[in-house]
Figure 1 (cartoon, each protein chain N blue to C red):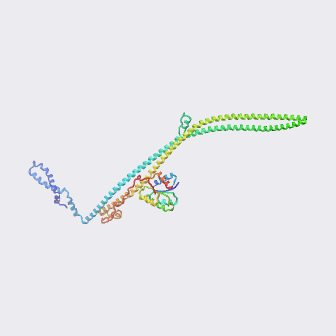
Figure 2: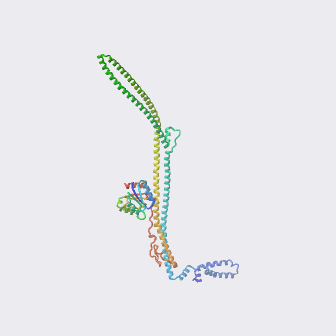
Figure 3: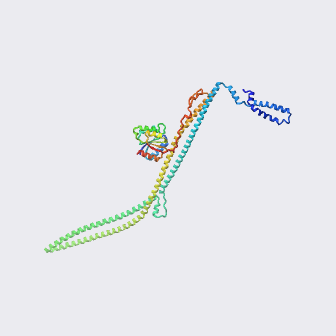
Length: 429
Length: 120
């Protein structure tokens, strides 16, 4: 307990100033009040100041400590010292943990930033590649459709018309031309058949002439034999023989006439057939020439158009091929970008285990130790079951620290490398 | 056309590698870990094996070692496809019997060219 005298002594430095403050209200009235009133008031000023110091002013710190020291027992002081030591230890650990956690979290923040950047870049790459693939696929489709949907230019010449035909129209034009050509060939075939029939008839007439010639040969033989018979008759000079001979000669003459007529008729037939064949051949040759000219007139522009169409198809196929290669490149980019998911996952795994787990473990241990110290200070809360065994260091009932596995001793996380730093490297052993 | 086994715990990676290889006409089987890969390797015959390093359970280096212990895979090419690029790990892979080391992310064209080189 602090006595008024101790309090006055401790605040003695402030007393003159306090008395001056209290005297100031009386100084201005010295000239208007009786002198004894001023004297009494100034005498009461030190008393009022002393009363204020004793009643209002707080006791000095040193005095309060001294007073507390008096109230604490030795056991309490020892306990407080242990608690203070534990608290100091705890604060040091908190400080170390905060520092290490700060470093780890800074590293984690950088890694997370890195992951976010790479994720964003990968998503952007995938999006762009998909857009590219879609655009190029549409271009390919347009190229292919341009072959099928090319409009015909009205009023152009045949070649121009053919060049401007779409592929289906071109195929239909080719088909029509082939049909026309086939019809002409069929006509030629029919005419040729007629010529063959005429030749067959000529061959028949020729065979007929052959027969007639055989008969004429036979007739000549008979004439020879008549000549021999005539010479015999001349030697015998018989009348009947001459009459018979004359009849036979007449018969032979008639037969010769008949044969000559038939030969003439056959020759006439051959002449007619040959004339007809000549006319038919002439007609066919004329028609063939006309058909050939017509075919040339149709085929030539179609051929030119075919060359142009082939070139156009080749160009479009080249473009489609180029677009296909570009699509393949885009797909490759998508594949590369999508691999960052795996890389990011591994980066996060590297963060999760060494950084966050260690920080969480250290925080859990410090929390346990804080609770333990709190219970040491307030024994009513003491519950040591399973509390001091979980931390990286253990605090005995006496407050002594038996194990000190500080966060600094734990391995720091390996800094994950950036995915782009050495990606795609290949090494064959 | 070759028969290839892909070993990776990441489904995305397996799909990416599988897509690349099947597009090139290869026959592909997948395993999500070293143990599953060993089982598949015993039941099938593969011309080539592509394995990741960081996998739960048996890691890629141990897988290479286990494969080399099998008589039928003593000389089969085994490529390691990983994000790891440390010299020590590469040396471990080489010692275990890996044929090559490819760092992710891989370029499909490059992977196929390496594949053809190794298979030839």
